[in-house]
Length: 382
Image 1: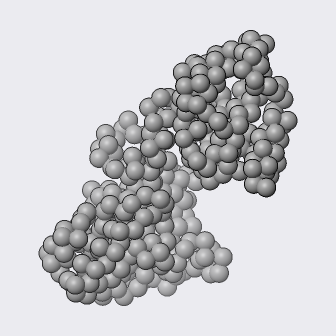
Image 2: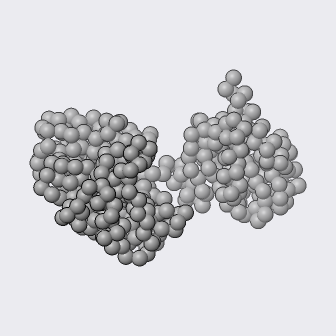
Image 3: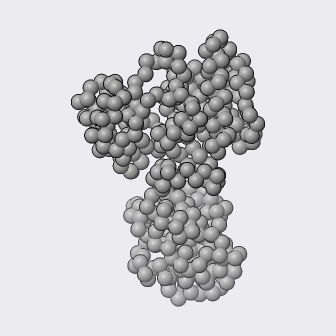
């Protein structure tokens, strides 16, 4: 699933004529000043990042003067978010707000439907609303592929004291949000806050949008979304190009598995035995020595990896090929990090023999191998 930058999510909203405040995307202080002058002060400067709580982290600033635009845009552009530099800002016109709301539509896999949520308590985290004011959170289910109707929102809006023309206008807005999720293959579209302005307009002041990566073939325009590249680290991109499924995490044990299910089980046991996986990495079935070697190279470059754990249950994956890849990587990249191997299945004997000839003992059971990797991490911490 691919999280979009706010301005990218709003571009999808704009495509479907969902009302938005005037805004401009910039990449420098000079551009920020020009945008503020064109939009008219006051404006809000918003860092474009892929993580939330920007306001609490000082990444959203309301400014009233050009000097403040210069100061705050320079300040935000000098910061990082999730270990990455902030490269883009959204300069947005301040609108006079009468009331704030929360609105979202997401895919509910358990019901194979779309779940629309609405609350008159905008600006708060949805978890906080559900916990402290559950009566203020309305939930309405819609079929995945059937056109929604605005009247479905009327009872919920009435319960929240919204009637008359406001009810009709807001129901139309919420209906359109459901349609956008349906038409654009989104898994989430969240607006927090959705605001009613003093002059009676409903505007999406924010946009948290997640696209379904599996539907990318239907949306060639997504190639223009830099967020779908920026969300990956250099190593994740490198692994993807090599045909390796790789996601970086926070931990100490670099994990390589042949198969996604085996990889997930390995991660769970690493946690269970008292350590943390540094990644999810699946070289896939039938992995070649080159692919195994590449996976080890990527992991060995990470200074936070204290131990590498290779877990192979070979069906179409051959144990001797995995062993050759491990030995190749150790020699080629001069890997000094301890490597623990569990190897069982096709050509197991040949693989074990190759590893043993190079001083590596291979386990045949999963738990002892994982316990050994965790033990090595703990020893390094002493």
